[in-house]
Image (tube, rainbow, N blue to C red; front, side):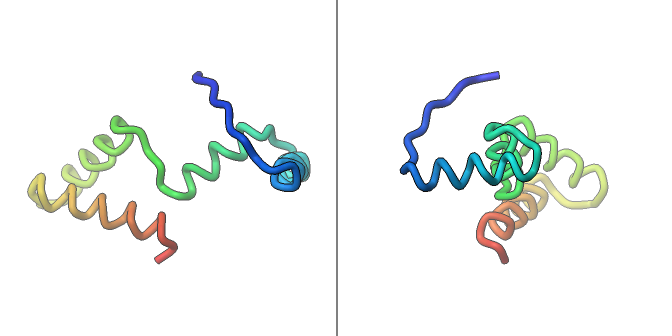
Length: 79
């Protein structure tokens, strides 16, 4: 697993630390879950999503990719 250093204001850091403790999670777990919630995926995960969509439908590669990108956009923007 990779490591990442970020700079947060002290109030933001305290709020993140408190939220993680309330959920009995580490800060890293909380951030990872947040990234999942916002649809942030690795290229491999995105390709897997497209592959699953393609096998479950009669969509072309272009249609399946468009569907996956639309779904990701909706998640990221709360639509």
